[in-house]
Length: 220
Image (tube, rainbow, N blue to C red; front, side, top):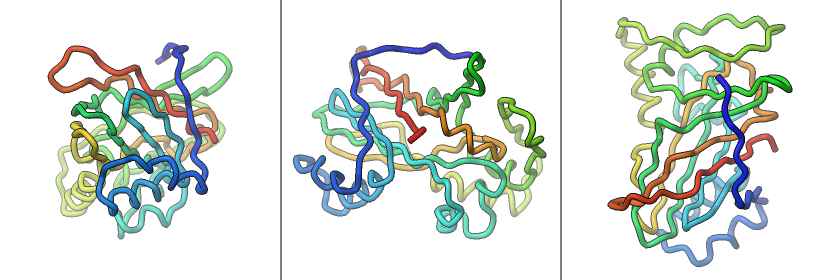
């Protein structure tokens, strides 16, 4: 499917390691939370406005998956994990529409595509039943169906994927929420050369107004 381009007045920042410690001097989370967030930002793209900073780090090396998936990896099955952090420096709690987040990219000059993130069950299914990909074809990966077979391996992988995923859609004031989103690229990781993480739905808890959408450039 196609998606529309937007043109808001926003600033996209690619954080260099030497700046990671400077950016959050005024933040209030605990020291351990701050260290973890800074470590994430060292190789992440981010966007920040209206008191919220969203960072995204695609996992493009197999060893990154080893801790969360010690036996079988989504990466080996062509599924990309993106480590996403939501840092709320405002005085109000925020709710993120996780189901509306998309990975968008350009297949060719006239073909823009978007992918919805996978559920934990779809991740497990992709690992156990990897699809065959024609390396000469340039096509959008199709959604992964989840079968009714709930084997021990399936349940174990589903639990691992769920435990590593973003744990909640609510980001309390002056706190950070972090976890993985999964996208089935069927091994076509070069699609990240034009990719953005599109986050259209962030709302202030208890109020009608929402924040301006976020579109984080992952192509760097």
